[in-house]
Each structure stands twice: as structure tokens, then as C-alpha cells.
Image (tube, rainbow, N blue to C red):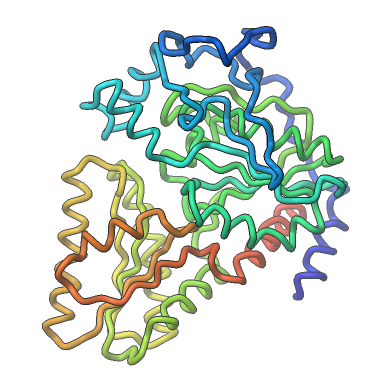
Length: 382
């Protein structure tokens, strides 16, 4: 199906989308609308009890981007019980001081909304993409790949993990609603929901009660919401991974592919992640004829011992292949570039390998995956 026909079918089904009612959600009752936040000292506030959705976000720039009111790059720091809650919920933060946690948060890209469509575009169906965010070139790659859909339907991307705020998600929904969207399809781009990020997003959208990081306000909207969950083994995603492996291949029968993903923190989540990733590894091996394809979940944000064990395993695979005279190829099984990619150079230091750093969203067919996800979601709720 061409992009034009696929997008047309999405628009045709929009009138039949089923409603998800958020009006009964329990939200914070604090009214911050009259506060001058630019002059306030937030360092001693208990942010877990605050309604950040009433706090003013940064102004939207000419490209449609605006940062969360809680963005570290604006000078904001966590305070009160937020530090303790995040220490309880995030293993790698448990031994950190408040200042170290602020530094760790500051190294991440700011949570932000990026409104992709032209402001003049109106439509009954809106599309909201949720993305981890990298704070760099990877964000723009995803924004640009969404352009064809954004020309047909109001489209926004909420970048960030909603670790300590959800106002960027609220703003994205509000802007899509203002563009006329009576139904919004939310696409997460997650292979599984067995990870802390998916659980945090589910909490924000009222789809679960587990807080993975800090307690943040849940979404408030009367707009119909259709949430596209994890995609599992998806033939379109598999095709992208095959193409990325082929791009760096010269002689498949004499090459080992390391299919590497970020991975979840918890061991039980990692079992689910590896089961799914192995299906892609098997598909790549069979389709291209590689000597072998190994599925690697780095568990990048897990306790150091877990990550170090995964790196040692990955290095053993690469070292054995090298001794056998095989080329080692690395393919990133992540949505955006510049996530785990830079760390892998030091992880595999001293081993010769060829690396395709592209994330899935760096492939031109990723827009087809988004469009098909939206079409299927609307069809399933007709």
C-alpha cells in the first residue's frame, strides 16, 4: 500500500475511533496558575505532589519545539521527596547524592514537545509519537521521518521519559486537540512493555498504576485516546533491521552480527526483551545468510554489574568470531540514534568491528510503520 493510500485509509476510519475517558482520573488539586515560577525557588518543593500541567512551559520556538517547565537546561532542579522517590524506583540512583542526581538528569535531553505539523493544518485525527529522546540529532531524524504523516494529520512528538514531569505530553495533547483532533492515536515505538519507560508512560495515560520514576500528573483530556502498545515482532521493523545489517555487510557467510539494544533495568523485564530481540536476530540470520546473529540487551541503565556482564558476553562473541577470521558487525536495535551508540565504541574497544549506528527511525520505511500502526489502531477501535 502506498503512503497516500495508507494515510487516506487512516483518515477515512477516524470517525469510528472508540473513546477512552480520562475525565474520572485523580489529578493533583493544586492551582499554580497565579504563581510566578521564574522567581520561585523549587529546590525545597515536593514536586511529586504538584500539578505541573498548570505550570507554564517554555515558549514554542519557530520549529514547534518547547521544553518542559521542569527542564534542567532552564536551571530547574528537583527537590523535596522527588529525590527519595527516584532513589527508591531507579537502581542506579540509589547511591547518588542530590547533586549527582541533578547532574545525571541534566545529561539527558530535556523533556519537550515538538509539534511537527503546520499550525494551519486541522483534522479530526491527531497522531502523538512518544520517544525516549536523545537531545540531539536523533530527535530531528525522528521529527523529519514523521513529516509525511504530519502533512496529512496534526502530529506532535513528546520527547522524554516523563521521569519528573509530564507537561510536555499534556501540551502535545492540548495542541493536537486545538488543531481539531477528536481522536488522538498514541504510538510508543516500544518493542515490549516490559520496561520502566513503558510503565511510566502507561501511568501518565491512565493505563497502569506503576510509577517507574517520580510521581507525575496524569493526562487530563476529554479527547478520545487510542494507545498503540508494544509492537513485538513486527515484519516492517524486521525489514528495517535487515536493511541496516545489509548496509554494513560484505560477505554474510563470514560475518557475525551483534544486534544490540538498550535493554530494561530489571532482570525479569530483560528476559522478555531478549525473547523478542532473538526473534529479530533469527530473522536477520535466515534472511541474509549471516554466519550468526547474537541478540544483546545491554541493560544500559541497570546496576553496573548487570551491564558489565552483558558487555563481557558481547565481547566474548566478538572475540571468538574474530579468532575464526570473521568480520564483526554491530546493528543498533533502537528507535533513535545517539542512544547506546557512543558507549559501544568503548565497550568493544580493542576489537575490530563495523557499526551501523542508525536507529530504526533513520530508515525511510519507519514512517510506513508509524502510518500502519495508526491505521491498525483506528481499525481496531471502529
